[in-house]
Image (tube, rainbow, N blue to C red):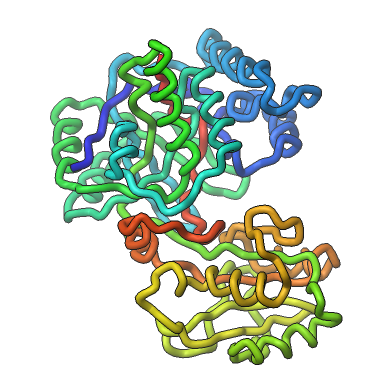
Length: 421
């Protein structure tokens, strides 16, 4: 069973809710965060990416983490952010391109992560873990949301969605890209008890996004327990629960700086059939869109990916060898093994400087521009993985290749904060 917890969130004062929320810390560089802060001095990036304001210090200097705490405490002292008077839960609503996403913000227990009631499909990196562990511990707060999925037994989503009918949000902001983000506080005792009861019928949840934030929260609980500084709230972390069939998932595009031993793009394209691929010119694509419809038939039985080089798109397809091998049969697994490593010599998908990634929600024209500019020699647009496949891999303790999925909505930081001190 899944146990969810109420908490008294720290949130922007109503007049500041448009300005304070920011993109998550890990989708911007320090330089990009600095530019955002210069344009908007109230940005929550001052808390989540305080290294942006301390360029002369190493990003993991103790003073960087202390600065995050100082800024957060200052926001509370100045009334920019305020603590709710009693524990509750929150409905998170995002509207993007006319599509609505609705989830429940609550806390979950670190023990559920450790006993696998919270399941994951990605490995975490120690350096990223350590950064967020120190950040959470020093600030005394979970400043970012963990994106969790659940299989809805039948009435959870409708219950959560009904809570915001004809109700004004308690916080609202619209991003530069036009995505509306809103939170609605839920404080009614009967409603909270019903939500807790509904989720008690859910056997497990799944991390869609925020693997490092979740692991880091567990680390903080362990360290505080060992040091005699443990608090009840330190044994929990903040999450947003979305029904698994009410989110959007994209592929994750690849960009390659050179073609290795292939002297020309044509030589590379002509080598693909030798590796068993059927290759055909795609022709015109909708460059404003983020996905290319396959020409190949037989959905679910074929690997399909699209290559862009020298001003043209090509589709490469071939039958899936073993559909029962959930990880090995992923398009990204085959791309890495047979094309990136087998043909181009890129053996380390996490660290090779020749390989870069772009979230699949970006328009195809962004890939085209980067290749046309000469910065990259090749772009690869991937088809999305089915959400059910992600959950099935997590159920078997499997690990997906790096950058396999791009889930939406992308959640903002600073709309709600969970303190652990």
